[in-house]
Amino acid sequence: MNLRVLGDDEDVLRLEVEGRVVQEDLDPERDPLGGLLGDRGYTRRVILNLARAEYIDSSGLALALVWHKRFVEAGGKLVLHSTPTLVMDTIKILRMDRVLHLAKDESAALALARGHNA
Image 1 (cartoon, rainbow, N blue to C red):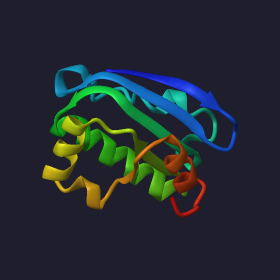
Image 2: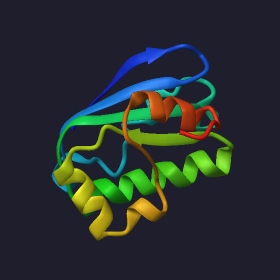
Image 3: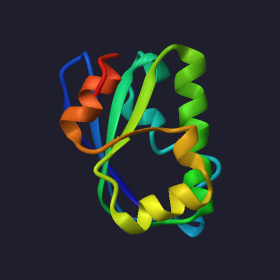
Image 4: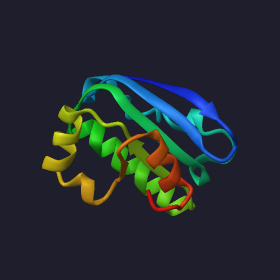
């Protein structure tokens, strides 16, 4: 899994994930998102583009759930968007669509992150 910054306007941090998000690529000792958030940490509003995510397994979704919880507890928000069909199918099978903030595309994700109806 490759996680990178697409843009940061101090209001919303735009990130992208590329590749497979699977257990063997996840290091339980290191949070790949933590270092990208800067000083404000999980108080940020973040949108995560999943368009280039090839696959996500239950461990990858567990990580997304941990991130979601950290954002909620800190007063920030994480919105996932542009989710490929295969990844969305996994999210729905595990009923994570009932918990995670999901948006159809970047503009809808920005509106949701900023607290507007998308």
